[in-house]
Amino acid sequence: MSRGEDLADLGVLEAAELLRARRISALELLEACERRIDERNGGEPTFDGAPDAVNAFVRRYPELAARHAQEADRRLAREGDQAPLLCGIPVALKDLFGVAGLPLTASSRVLDGHVAAEDSAAWRRLREAGMVLVGHTHTHEFGAGGTCDQVANPWAPDRSPGGSSGGSAAALATGMVPAALGTDTCGSLRIPAAMCGVSSIKPTHGRVPIAGVLPLSPSYDHAGPMARSVADAAALLDVLASGGAERTPLMPPPAPLPALPLRTSAADRPLAGVTVAVTDRAEALGCEPDVLDGLATARAACEALGATIVELPAAPDLDPADLSAILFPETWAFHEPFADRADRYRTSIREFVELGRDSGSAVDYVRAHQRRTAVTDGWETWFERHGVDVLLDPAAVTTAPVRGPGYDSGNLGGEGDPLIALTVTWNTTGFPVVALPAGMGARSGLPVGVQLVAPRGREDVVVRVGIDLQAGPLPPLGQAPDPALAAS
Image (cartoon, rainbow, N blue to C red; front, side):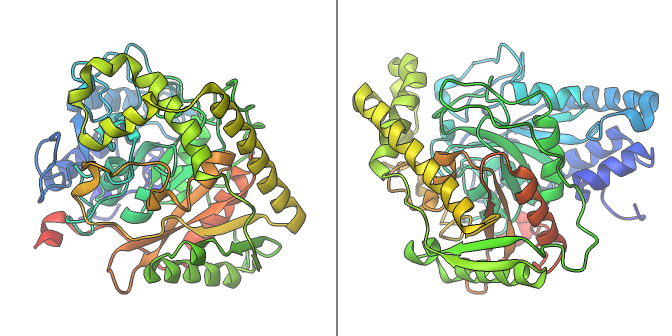
């Protein structure tokens, strides 16, 4: 680090290199992140947020974080290069990931006073790697929506950060932490990544266990990493997947995770031999012009790096009614014990949960899953038949929407929600997806993002393409401005 540079601006891999070289300490890195939070979060965490506050965090744990950082420094001194790569790196967890003995509330008053009895599997793996827990970040209540309105978009505080992992995305975009975890049921890692200008990886379903994570719809839920670059997110995924995939009665576990690249290729045309498909989905769904510009930019970047681009019609998708037939019963299975607390939900979330209570029969549920299997098989066949390595799509049909109405009556996630139109397909199939920025919209002045999709188990393919795109022709996005300046 040069004199005058702020340690809070370091990415995961940059910080890891300096920590292992003992040029900085884990405690110094944490203190820089804590100062940045004090400067940019907009005051102490609050439940509803404020117009002039980013409010990325629902809770902070400064004393615990300091202990974790001190432990990491001792481990680095003791183990040197044998210490885990992520030892000493600060991380924030979406308020769905359990940490034994700490509050876990899903950003909801329904769970006021609730304390996690055990660590989620994802946090346990990161903790064993020596990561430093800074705090829990806000989620759209119970992960059941795409706006997370109690959090401001750092690029424009009057706009939503996207959701449901909006707090994690905002914390990354403002440089409060270098790493975060989120979840993704219908797009909740990729939508906020696109709207805040950061990166995320939705792994193959089951790759990262959701044990100890508050569920929305378990057969659709994915847990995954978020960071300011694809390479940094890949380093997190490598640890999150290190204990093996999750076994569930709904989907078989993916094959073992292939080795993930963490650096760009040295070749002049690193995507030579890679076939990238672009479908008719973006045009058919009426994406904003800025979003289509971002897609065109990413397509041109793939071509510049040597990829072969093919234009293909999309495979058939799941009927929205079948999504509802799966999503709402699974949601109600978790929320049924809270029926006597219905008045504590925000309005749209109460309506969402009530749809689960009144959802269809077991026959409808099973038949929807059968049709889901056929859709998944159709997409697997589509990739194989056309020789496609990666599908390139926008990560959201719009730039960040105006912040505020996301919890109003009638604003339900799920069937018919335009925010998930391009993302939910890959929760249906369980395919791995990388999301990364594709520049700033010329009209909106807001970030736009793209997603890279491959068949189940091929995280190595989408990570490789994502890293090379981000290191090459795609326009660098940088860090969001100080929110106080953006607001003015």
